[in-house]
Image (cartoon, rainbow, N blue to C red):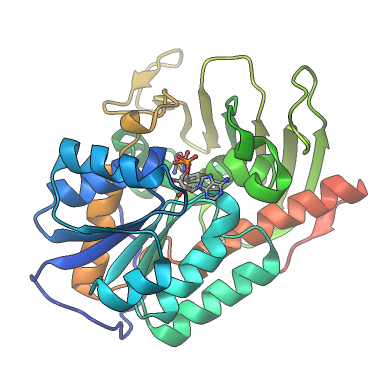
Length: 354
Ligand SMILES: NC(=O)c1ccc[n+]([C@@H]2O[C@H](COP(=O)([O-])OP(=O)(O)OC[C@H]3O[C@@H](n4cnc5c(N)ncnc54)[C@H](O)[C@@H]3O)[C@@H](O)[C@H]2O)c1
C-alpha cells in the first residue's frame, strides 16, 4: 500500500509488537469480513462483539464457529467499553449509527476503524475529527477500494510518473442497494453516502488528495424504476481543481448493471481505463493490463478487507495516523456535502474545506 503517512503524532496505547485487543460493533454482513481479518492477523485478539438487535447474538455465534475467537458477546456498548479491555474498535453498524458508535469508542480511548460513511452531516464530521484529535486515538475510515491490489499498483505507477501529470479524471460507482435501511435517508443517508463516496475518494486519491478543489457542480434525479427509495438515486458531479484540472464522479443506487466501478484517468504521458493503462512507451493503439485484483464484485467477501485491517493494525502498532484518518477522510465528505448542496440548489458551490 503506498502509504502517505501524516507526520508522526503521539497516539495513546501504542503496544509495539503486542496483540491489539479489538471489538467489532454490529455483527452483520460487513462485520464478518472485519472479524475474519482480525482472527487471521496474529497481531490482533478479538475480545468483544457488540450487537444492537436480538438477531446479532446468533450472528456473532455463527462468526465464532466460522473464524474461531474467544471474545465475549455484549448487547450493550457502554458495558462492552467498560469491561472488555478492548483497545480498538471496528464500527460495522449501519450508516446512521456510525457517529454515535465512533464517538463513544474514541471517547473511551479506543482506536477506531469506522466503516463508510464516516458521518451523515458536516456537524457530525467536525465532532468526529475533534474527538479523535482530543483523545489522540488512531482512526481510519473504510474506503476499502484503495486496498485492491490493482488499484494500489496503478497508484504506484501514477506516483512513479508513468502517466505524466494527470489532468482529467473520472470515477463512478454503480450498484443496486437492496435492504430496508439502505433505501431511506434517515438510516442510509444518500446515494453519495451509501456508495458514491467510494468513487469520490478514489478520484481524489489519484488526482492528488491534497490538491485543492475550487468548485463543484452536482445534479441528481429521483429513482426511475424502484419505488422504495426516499432519496435521489442517480447523481453526477463535476469538480474543478484550483489548478484548473477537471474531475467527474457519478453514482447510481438502483443500477441495473452488474456491479460497476469505473476509474478513467488522462495524463500528459498516458492514462488509465479501469484495469487497463497506456503509456508513451507502448505502441500507440496498445493497452497494458494491470495485474492484480480490480473492483468487480459487490460481495464483501470479494473486497480486500483483510489487507485494510492489516493496515489499520500497522497504524496502531506503529503509532502513526492512517492515510484515511477521520481528519484526512473529512475532505472527501466535505466535498460530498458540497456536491449535495449544489444538487439541491441547482448552482455550483465554491469549495474551501481543502
Ligand atoms: N466498505 C465497504 O465496501 C462496505 C461494504 C458493505 C457495507 N459497508 C458498510 O458497513 C456498514 C454495515 O453494513 P452491513 O451491510 O453489514 O449492515 P447490516 O444490515 O448487516 O447491519 C449491520 C449491523 O447494524 C445493526 N443494525 C442493522 N439494522 C439496524 C436497525 N434497523 N436498527 C438498529 N441496528 C441495526 C445491527 O447490529 C447489524 O448487525 C454500513 O455502514 C455499510 O455502509 C461498507
